[in-house]
Length: 330
Ligand code: DAH
Image 1 (tube, rainbow, N blue to C red):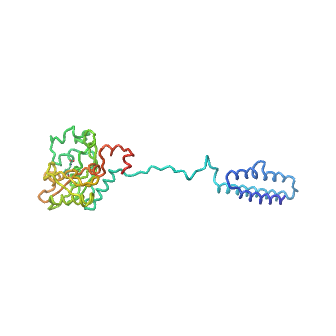
Image 2: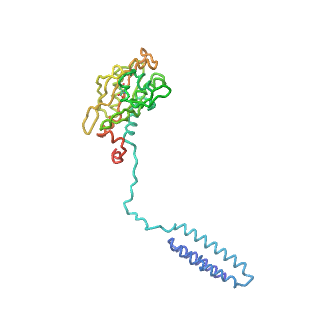
Image 3: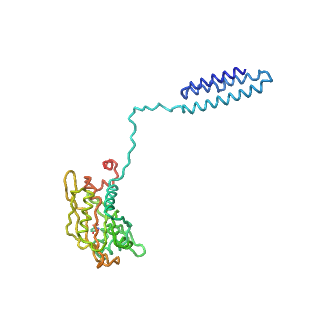
């Protein structure tokens, strides 16, 4: 009997090692550990064994059972479970995962902030829901001015007697920066602005601006133009140019429109990108800065303008429709 136990062990172990697939391991299990298997058959012989040998033989049989079961488990784990369905064809082309990327506007914003950062401008910000003081009054846009018309603004109702609206310009952040930060001051602010325009290829009721403000002693138009030119060279290339055309904004005096020459599809072209000027003394007065001691320059540029011209995007609505076929191109 003891010989039979030993040979079953040897035979079982060697056959198990030879089982090279989950299916073969399963066949092995039925043959050796199954209800009608070899082990059960051997165990059934125990009752006929001589009495004095029974305890020893019983112990050996039990050890054999545990051993075969353990070997079975480890061989099964080694081979893994049986594959479900057809096996994988590694020569198939495969499924491409959709690759995400940052929105072209977000990238443009980061690049622009980066350039101004290198020119020494810190980043400031302010809320998109503003009060009339920051959007108009402090910016020298008095009560009754047409810019305050209900049809040109998204008014949001009153809160504690203060009229609120979605800001129409990032110039609001000029006021917030001067109210809270010590002088001298050199900041840019990027953000969304809102105007109730009818949507078409060049108008959208929400867009982005970058605002710049520098307040120091002895600043002049030369510093303003230098800053804009430095930005243009860094962002559009060393052949870029800046042109200022006299204009009017309530918060600057003198004021100008800013054009920059940028490289568009093989050609240098003038593109109007925003406004600028020297901070109006009335604006300084509104935030308690002495206009005799301090000078300031400011500018506000349209981000979509820059991105659209630079990347040849002819319809502003595409920037906000989130159609992956459009966004993937950039
Ligand atoms: N806030 C103006 C606008 O939205 C743009 C602008 C013009 C900003 C002149 C300025 C500036 O800072 O000095 O049309």
